Length: 149
Picture 1 (cartoon, rainbow, N blue to C red):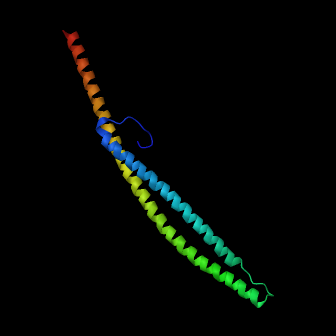
Picture 2 (cartoon, one colour):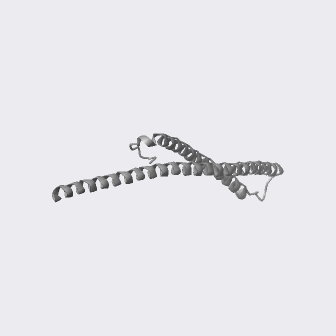
Picture 3 (cartoon, rainbow, N blue to C red):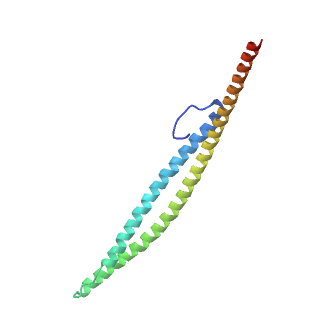
């Protein structure tokens, strides 16, 4: 029901309002999940870049002491950045897991309300069909009674 706007039965106005609120929450949590997934991917890409920089760092066979100290200092700083990036990536993973769980909960709540609305509409259709069949039977019985006289 959520993504298509159709006429809401008068008895279901309150439940339809709940469905609209649930839909907004589900959309918000889905957008939030997409955002944290993008942030986590960016952090992981940055971490991979730093790790490859360390892996590709080489020490020339002929170098001065100052160049060797400078290269070692650069690598130490990159190592610190790698540690910080790993911590940030781990935090991002926890946030992503939480956002995914929140979205799943919101999606399930929305589906439950939509299912209830669909069941109510189906019940009303069934009742209308029964009424129509009963009326048709009554009309047929009246015709038969008129012809029998």
